[in-house]
Every structure is written in C-alpha cells, then in structure tokens.
Length: 193
View 1 (cartoon, rainbow, N blue to C red):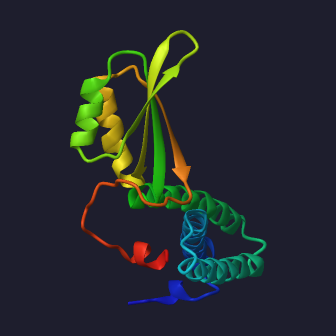
View 2: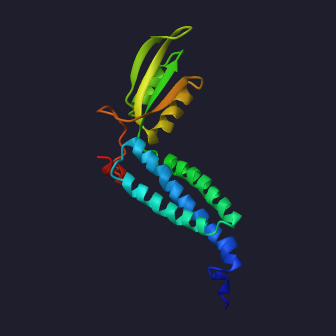
View 3: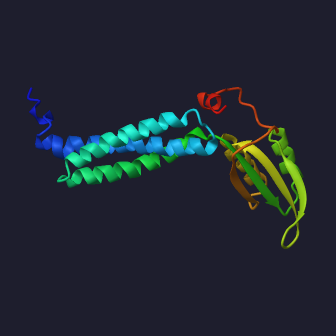
C-alpha cells in the first residue's frame, strides 16, 4: 500500500488534508472561544482559563499553518469556514448546556388565576403584581428560573395564555429564592464558586 500521498509536500496533503486540519482546528478553537465567553458572562471564573489556553494554542497552530502556505487559497477558505462553524457549534453547545439563570416577566390582560396556580404547582417561584398597562389593568408575573427550566415555564404560559406578552433576560447573580430542584450537581456548578 502506497502512503506517499500523506507526505507533507504532496498535492493531496497541501490541497486537501492541510485545509481539513485547519478547518477542524478553527472549529475547535472558536468553539472553545465561544464557550469561554459564555462562561465569563456567567461568572465561571475557574474554568475560563482552561478554555482560553485551548483557544489560543489551537489558534496559534492553525494560523502557523496558514502562514506557511500563503499561496494556498483553500487554506484561507478553510480558516474562515472553521471560524464560522466554530461560532455556530459553540452557540449550539451553549443552548444545550443551558447554564445560568433567567428572569421571566409575563404581562397578562386576562384572568390568570389558573396559570398562576399551575406555575406554582410546578414549583416555579412566582411573584404576581397588579399593574396599569397602556390600555388596561394587567397582572405581571415575575419568575427567576434556571435557564434549563425556562422552556417549560414558557410552555405552561403559552398553554394557558397563548397571547401573553413575556420577556426573558439573563441574570448575573441571584441571592436565595424558590427554584425547581433536579438533584444533580454538575462540574460547572462546582466550578462557579
């Protein structure tokens, strides 16, 4: 079996293997960079340096190979494509991890007792405030929930009041409160302290 195509100066290596390696390297370093920014914004300071180290070392390796092959336009495309794909993959991983806490505000114009009862029965901490809207009296529901529980909360709101106006915002710090329990403790939650 002839493995000559794997030689570093062969056309197959220069035009196919090297761009693939650069593309994959950029995916890994940009995914690490995206996750590093997520962890910084959530306050996970102990894990951030690990991601920063991985991001920078992989970037140096990738850019070094691009600089060695400035006459290879496929390397440029692989570099940029890996950057774009790494950002996208990092955002998908962030969604799957669902780290952090959000505040959900729901503004209701119609009767909300059943919705409030359902949310409380599902162990969501809830504050209900009577308020004056621009047209009529409204009720505002406030709840601070783990980000991974936000979809369930919103699904209940949509079930009971599909036309409710709601907003969801990231919260940096929370002190006490009522939160749904899942009984698990992750590496990330341990790193946050």
